[in-house]
Amino acid sequence: MRRRTLLLGAAILAAAACQREAEKRPAGDPSIPDPSAVIAPLYQPYLANGVLVGLQDQAPWSASMRDALVAMMARSEAANAPILDFDPLIGAQDYQLSGLSVTTDNVVANSHAVVRAHFANAGRETEIHYDMLWQEGVWRVDNIRGADWDLRQIAGQTPSGLPPP
Image (tube, rainbow, N blue to C red; front, top):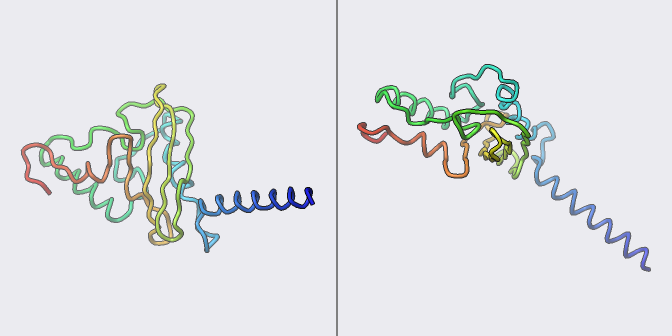
């Protein structure tokens, strides 16, 4: 009897662990990739001291986020003043990254997900959260958030001296 209870308990724990793992991955279509697989390669240029590209080409943005970034850059250029004065992928202006870990925190299949990047930047622990949308059959970045900033909110700002967007 005790052995049966032990085996039943182990089976229940194993099933619960599998369920938690299944909740992290998109359900339904097995061809839908883990959204963290979209974010991890974005850090390769930082880790290899490679060539960095402009903000609008830095990530596979959702349509609305790309529009917000393009409009922000136009307002910034018109005012000849920066609206965004740091790199949102690293949450800083300068970088020396190490210990990168990219994980999927939450997924709603065929809809949205949250991906977390954790790393040390010049010895300072940093965590960046990506709000992802499933659009046109791929995961796209709809927002990036740090400890005290939100890219979508920053993109809606206007430099001093200009009317709001």
